[in-house]
Length: 263
Image (cartoon, rainbow, N blue to C red; front, side, top):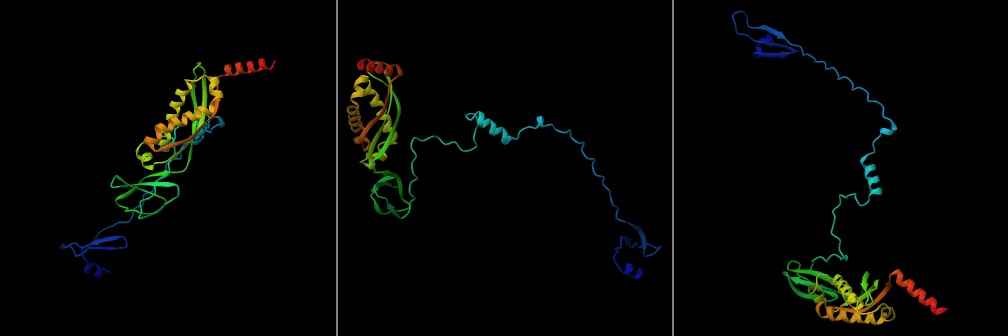
């Protein structure tokens, strides 16, 4: 053992004892110290004091419970994390992708632009496109479409405030004008009907409006075609007034007159 330690370098480690060699006159070797690994004992922290028991009345509702209660009581004040998109008057279908070969459905017209400029109108059937420079910008439906006119307020010639609604049937006869002549032809048609209908009702009395409803419908069709056919490429086929709602006092007066006539 001693011969092995002498032949080794200055420091020799074995069984936790550290030996190193001193070149002094007293001897070739001396024992410096023996170190033993020390273990440190860590005492665990004292446990936290017990919390007082909660009563059933002190239990707070969770965030999901609070939001559901707020939604049920105040539905208009709750906010949503979803992206709020601005409302659109009509929902439009997405445009077809720009591929080389396309098949245009029947009763549709596709407007193709080449490098940002109008190029051609694709009829129904097979079409060949250049996917880099050609772009399908508009898809127009050539079928007859029905647009619902919401309830409108109007004043007759004899100063009677009435409410009326209707339905209009239109058809695209020029896809180019319907695409480039107006931004949204459906919305514009309805707004045009509202203004023209209020103007014509203001020239007639309530009794004439109730008796000559068909004449008023034909007059609206004629006025819309004069404005929309040439500029927007839209033809108004027919217009029908669905409901005419006069005030309650006017209705009572008509009922009294009818009862008096029956006597």
